[in-house]
Length: 396
Image (cartoon, rainbow, N blue to C red):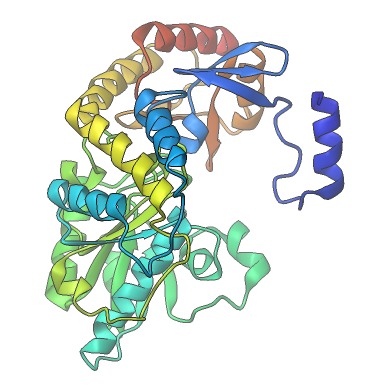
């Protein structure tokens, strides 16, 4: 089909939640390069919104997917043992703070599971704690519960009154506001160590450490949403490691499957022990194919120290972006290979992203008029240099 035919079908039959999309349909990928239907090549600096950590057609991903598919077993349900599920859970526990893992299909499902786990933890103790405090400008998903936890009026307004009850937001990086929001009914504080959708804004180190102390003092659980910041992207396997802060519950997705849908809730034994048979579940979560792909990709990234690679490449790219001589670059912020370029209010990030697409570079945006950059972790210096050169030309 031609692009025009695809657009016509989409307009006629697909629920219009994405509006007018960027005028391209990618049909093939190799490394950090995507190709459209006309064979035009694009260098990917967005990785499917920080998903395709190993780029396209990587043997650790494609090989595992094909090998598992050829067994004929894609899904058997969680009524039976699933070998790659058990191996992936063990791998994640070995390399993180966690003692237990539950697999979902997305970041939103993982965050929903994390909030359920926090509430069940206090329910099991006979406690009435149920409230969860998150941050303004956060993004935790699009289910009713994760929308209620997401600190954007744009996402919340159509779904008020919000469900479930007891979710509220306070300004990010504001410890006094957080302290004021906490009371004897607070079960958990839910934060991103760096807000991605919210403008690529890192938590202040002193703030995040103080939040951990507050949780300990008040008997509150700390949930860290590492859906976008995890899996080596920010320069460590998970971003919180750079802060010296350990959560009670953490969520992961996006890069976890390197393009295949999978999410995870990771928890300490203290918290996980509150779960009983039947308290949570999923038909597709932790299915054989998803876990086989994720297991192969995670093993590869850990064994080849992609965290260090992201840290070094990210520092190189950040310096190059900061060196662009343009008054349109107000700030470059972020960690590792999750970076944001703050633009002036009269220079829309969305329009700039479309112009960069026309130049053959895929980038994203974030709230606050930010150009968001989250390339595959395999990106080369040559590809980064070409992008910076093209961006500088566009901003001149």
